[in-house]
Length: 332
Image (cartoon, rainbow, N blue to C red; front, top):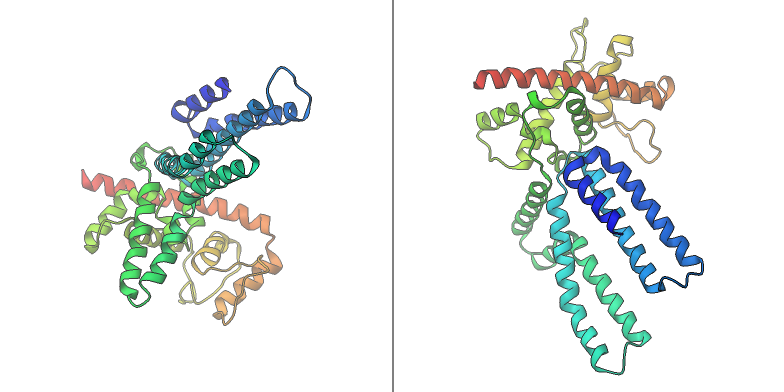
C-alpha cells in the first residue's frame, strides 16, 4: 500500500494528468491482488487487513478516476476533493463517535452495533455528495411562496460550483495547438449546457474578457460561458462557404462537400439535432433542420460525422486562437 500512496502522490502532484492512466491501472492491479488474497486462504495476513487494503485500493482508484475525468473536462478537481473529504470525515467523526463510545463502554461491538456504525459512516460519506440536491429540495420547500429568493439561491449555488471547478490556465499563446484543439472540442460538446461550459478554461480567454467589459456585465462564470458560446457560434458560422443564393445559412441546407464541416458542427450543436438518438424528439423543425436530419440519418454514418466534427473542431480552434492572438496584441 505504501508504494501505491507514493506513486499516486507523485503522479497527481508532479507527473501530470496524462500519466495518471498508469496509476489507474496500478490501483486496479492492487485491488485485484487484494481480492484474490481475500478469496484464497492466507494465514500470514489477517482478513481485516485485507479488507482495509481493498478499501484503500478503491479509494485510490476513485481519486485516479476523478483526476482523469477532470483532466478530460479541463476542470480543477483538488478543491472539490479536499472539501468533500473534509466534510465526509467531519460528519463521520461527529455521528460515529457516540456509537463507537457506546461499543467501547458496553460489552463490545455486536452485529447490530457494527451495522449501525457502518450505516452512519455511509450516510456521512453520502452527505457531501447529495448536498446540492438536498439544498435545492429544502429551498423548494422553504421558499415555496418566494420564487425570486429560490431562484437567487439556485444561481448562487451554481456560481459557487463553477468557481470551484474553474482552473487557471496560461494564455492562449502558451497552450500547445493540440491542447487548445482538445479544449475546443470539449467546449463544443458542452455547447448546449451553459453550466458545464462555464468550467471550460477557454472562458479565461482575453477575447472573452474584452467582450465582457464591452457589454458591462458582471464577471461571473456563467456570463463568461455565454460569451464563449457566442464566440464558438461565430467560429462555426465562419466554416460556411459563401451562400450563392443569398439565403442565410440557418435558412437553407446544403449537402455538398464544402459544407460538411459547417453541417457537422452547426446542426448537432447549435441547432441541437441528435440524428442517431432513438430517444430524441424532433417535432416542428424548420425546413433546413428537417432536411439536415434526414441527410444525417440516410447519408452520413455516425463514425463519419465524428471524423468530420473532429476536423471541424480543429478549424474552430485555429480560428479562436488566431482571434485571441489579435486581441492579445491589441492589449499590448
